[in-house]
Image (cartoon, rainbow, N blue to C red; front, top):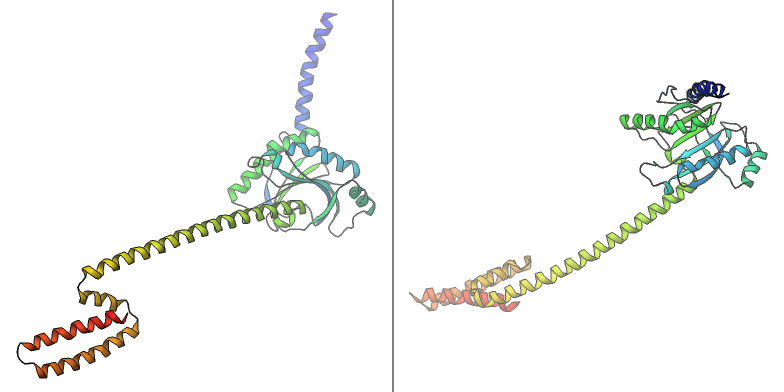
Length: 309
């Protein structure tokens, strides 16, 4: 009896390993993956979906729920965040079933059943260019293999060609998982829940930026105001000290430079008056007194300019 047990164990072990190997191969372990840019695998679609936030590994429950309502419909998943950059609880995704494609009309009975189960309805447009590939969907293991085999290829393809492709869509139909990431009109592939969250995030960023800007503005106003006061006080102190230390003629030059164009005409008028006075005094005084008469009017002119202010 022990010999038979040993023999069965020896035979069953290789058979089990062979079965597992065949199962993995059938699931797509070594399937060829060709990523390309071209036409999308679907036209305009209308689909029922539920939106969730959380780790992508939890999306299986929504796929199961959607499949239970419409087992003959193609399932779809839309994944909006990169799990390598976004924490699991913050990842956003939508899962549901495609109700109609192209010009076809959705089944009203199925539509009501999905809406009664809490699903929302939305439409995606048809785009001309997407990044796309396919992977076999034959077993449950195929769903696990897609993570390690397909997405690294997609990410490398997009990165090497510097493409702007998002979000990532998965369509499950006819034994295949069809992957696509639109290269245009990406905003049309965001369900309303994602748009609302993006809008709230944008409003928060604008609020923070406005508060930072207003804070910086108030600081700059305060700083500039302080600067003005400091500048004024500094100029006042310099002006006060220059009254006692600068000669009268230098003081007049400084005051004259601070005048407007009107001050220039005033200077010409005073200069004419001064010249007339000089001529009168020159007629009265002769010889050495001419130099004295020239000095006195100069002092009188600077005094008039200083006193006029």
